[in-house]
Image 1 (tube, rainbow, N blue to C red):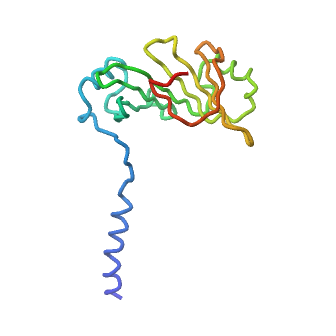
Image 2 (tube, one colour):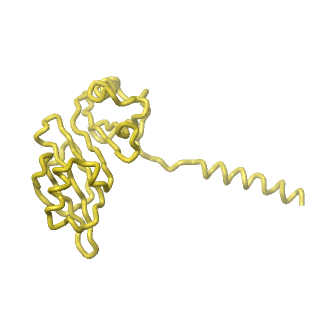
Image 3 (cartoon, helix red, strand yellow):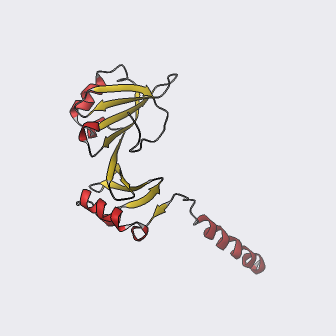
Length: 174
């Protein structure tokens, strides 16, 4: 009996050891590995955000900074910076909640033919040129292709398009 327990001990240790291993292969980097131009640009652009809560990642020719709005874990934000420290875009992800976005966008969405579809995600995209800012509401309905609706910040519907699931970057043309 003691021998059996003794043989089980390495198996239990191995199980705990391997279950603690993560499978996070993202190119996430700590603040100490991010160029100071990016960190300084972030601090300048978003002075109210606690820099210690930000996760930086290198995404192609950009650095992204991921964080939550005002300690609200429901609202995720990702800001994009060029390698020379220029702010290029911020995506604010509101999840599925129409009540987190401005009333003008909510009203405009409810005037579309998609108002009865299920909301999959709502995001705001902001740029240095505020005239390019827009909301995207992704919707789905059984038997129909997923659709993305693009609204100007004043509630004007820009367009609807098939939702391909492709990420929007600072280079994406809407």
